Amino acid sequence: MRLNRYLAAAGLGSRRSVEALILEGRVKINGRIIEDLGTVVAPGDVVKVGSKIVQPQETVHAVLYKPRGFLCTASDERERRTIFDLLPTDWPRVYHVGRLDMESEGLLIVTNDGELSLSLTHPRFKIEKEYEVTLDKPFDPAQKAKLLRGFHIEGGRAKMDEVEQISANKLRVILSQGIKRQIRLMMYDCGFEVENLRRVRIGSVRIDKLRAGMWRMLSPKDVADLKAGRSPKKRTIPERPPIASRRTV
Image 1 (cartoon, one colour):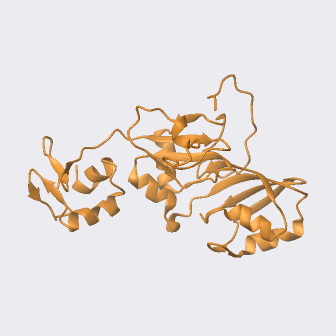
Image 2: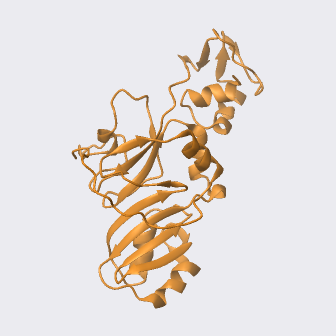
Image 3: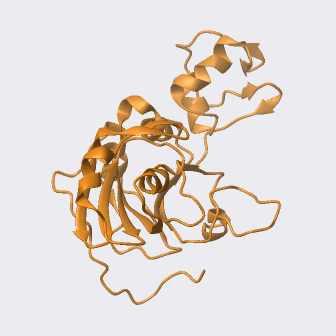
């Protein structure tokens, strides 16, 4: 296994980002400093970053339905509930890719795959994210052009890729940006308060039958599609069929 892939599999970052560790001379194999990016790790080799031995972890690719009231953080000094309270304790260390604010709900990707994280977060990949947005009053269709054209909010220039009105005060919104609280700030600028925000799709992965607090593993096809930036051809908001059980939150 090439050294950059080995380090990425050990949870140290994407293949590209861990190359900096190698070039800085911080990686040793069997006690010898390695600075050649083409180095291959053989079975039985001891790899250290600094003074710590590192080994590839079990790779986790999962999707979680974050409920409202949970934080996207590993710990909270006020001991509020976090998304990691919903995940198995025997998993290797995983990270959430992107975030949802405390008042929002819906899909989050959790993984220790640095390559997948890069594919989902780097601006050049423009991964679509689809949301159901419930407003405090009926939407004014005259505001749609402004949302699609874009304008400046706190955090930068923001625009929506698609806006579809599905009822008087409910919208379907697609973004390929990741500005903090983007939808809430854009709607506020247009004169609306967001009463509920639910992310129902990331790339090609839909929320389907997941309920608040539940998670499922991604299939190899899901992972390949996300890394390739694929989105479904038909973009429709899934119905919420009844389900017999759910994780208690």
